[in-house]
Image (cartoon, rainbow, N blue to C red; front, side):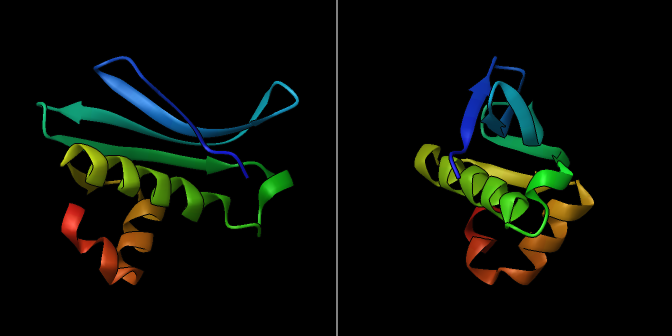
Length: 92
């Protein structure tokens, strides 16, 4: 599954697109220059059960680590993934 990423400096998203259709997305908004808030995650029925949501969170964690950023997971799905994945604690 190919995770893509867009960011306009104010908000951004990690997403999965297939056949010119967005099938999964996780959106975020910036809080200053060093943190972002994950505010929404949505996965289409076509990708349910394939771990797409977790892969979106993993992509956000990789991005945060690469840029030395922190994440505030307000989205209930993302928060649940962080709660169950202690190795992501370094970006909280």
